[in-house]
Image (cartoon, rainbow, N blue to C red; front, side, top):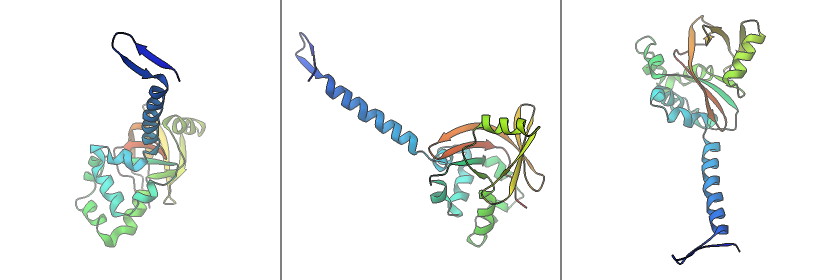
Length: 182
């Protein structure tokens, strides 16, 4: 056993113990980071409280805490506030769970598409790329003034305003508008 003795203080610290404590602390930090899910990313954001409430109402928490990987385009609270008056309240009612689920899963793509992958796919697609969502619909991604724009099946557009919020089971990109399926 290696001992470190600090003379004059009468303190002996084993290097082995320090290494063990360091390894345990590092393991706890790495494990906590690796276990953070796309849901945890949203829950940790004051700008996504409406999205979190909707995910809970649709019973999608367990799904989005699964292995994934998932790419989530997460609308901010203001995006929900800009929907026609009463829309959010109506969608959160238990009888509208199917529609809410369809809308929310329209914001999710299977796979781990970071910003670089999205931009490369747009460039490889001569300026746009269509991605299939978990709901079965499609979103078209393009670039405008250096920003990724998502166009939904109804022609609505959302701008990606923050990218690459990494989670253990995917990645979250923040958007400024709720995109809608057909």
